[in-house]
Amino acid sequence: MRIAKLIQLPFFLGIILFANHSLAQEPSVTTETYGSWTYRCSQIAQQSDAQTSAKKACELVQVVRDGKGNVIAQIAFGRDPDGENKLIAVVQVPQGTLLTRPVTLSDEARKNNLTAPYFSCFNNICLARTDIEPNLLSALGVGDKGQLEFADRTGRIVRVLLSFEGLKAASDRLMETAG
Image (cartoon, rainbow, N blue to C red; front, side):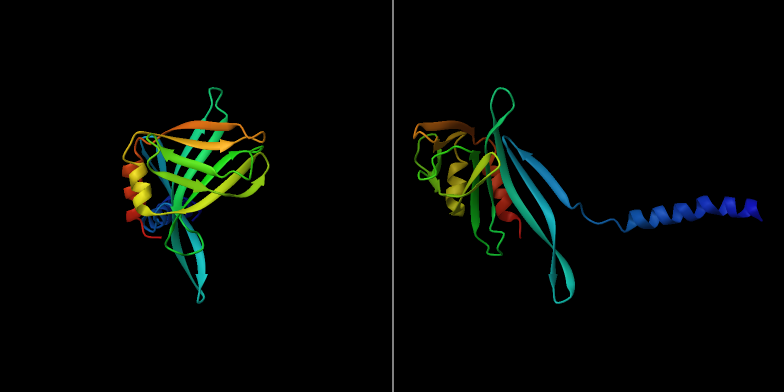
């Protein structure tokens, strides 16, 4: 009797594993790389009318590091998390910046510019945020280079060179993703 139970155990484990595998869901977090930009999406559970549905939160991100690997700045483009279907840009810079002068992101020719005022500082970072029109995001992605400007606490302008390589393809991917 005991031997029969031991023989049945692997059979039942196989059925359980097969059932779990066949019921697998889509990944909760995905990332794709487009040149210097990372496109990432994650599932966000939401409660509505006693039913749980999943919503995707997707963004494009570039992390700029110095020669020692320290993060100098991060730039992210995504949909407004407040549920509106507009695009936003969020820029992270080091703490100790002059908060009265907003962050500016532009292409190499400075033809296409984005200005973002600060909204919060904590730990060792300050964050700036602004709305961005889809056509401006696409225009920034036409060139391969850009820059980020902010002022340190003394008012000295800090320019960080950016790579826009892959931004056009990544922004197209972001635009096709429904929230």
